[in-house]
Image (cartoon, rainbow, N blue to C red; front, side, top):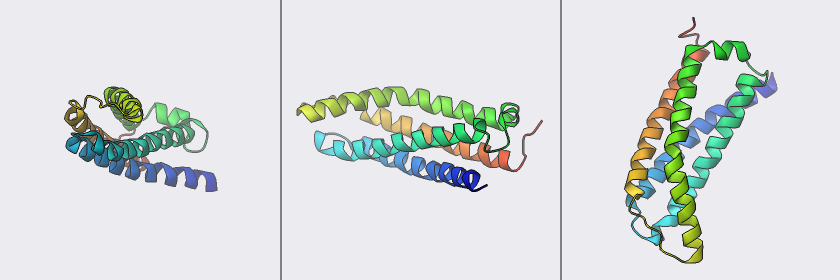
Length: 150
């Protein structure tokens, strides 16, 4: 019982921190025009990455680790499919910013000036990710209340 409660609490807290870190990264990217702006982008990106990892690990543990309602429940729950669909889209949207930020980090460490022209586009991607994260929260709270059950 304690582990279920702890996993649920950490999972829910990670949603809040993920939303805040994506917002912070998006704002930093929108303002990013020089290498002096990169530490703020990198900091927010690191937190967002850690939050994503926590969300995925705790989510897998809750859905498939025997801590909650059971795998059969989740696999037959339409809102779970909506939540996982939103997660897949968030992760797919993350590929381009993640790859660019990895290149920027390497260039920054070497003292080079990375090409920051796509920063605003990555900021807009973050806004889509935030919207999808909110969809995930609505799906999760709907599941918790039995909405959408077949």
